[in-house]
Image (tube, rainbow, N blue to C red; front, side, top):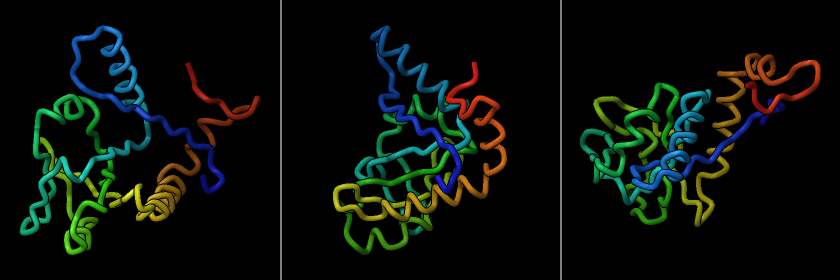
Length: 155
């Protein structure tokens, strides 16, 4: 991305479960989140309440976010709101100026998307490219490239 090697991991399925195999998968996903340089949390706009007067977005059901809160929400977490096509146009207009509030902390709304209508996707890619270039630039090159080429993962 912007000439920098980037690894993107999908950690879908972070939730409470009684299934042992699923618990292991969730723990592996949380480990990836703890080790990452940037965490993108994709949230369905139908799962949040928009508080226009406070410019805040909060979960409708806190239980749905419990596992995410305990480990995944870090100072490296930015929020992507998806399914903006289900909102009224007036509601979409300023959502990037709002903050996602969870467990006493506020998180930046990185982009408002409609993957269904391909809205905001290019803006997301452009912002992510800029974030990589500005925030990680030299570090990523030094960390992932050694004398044998690009290193996918140090162990």
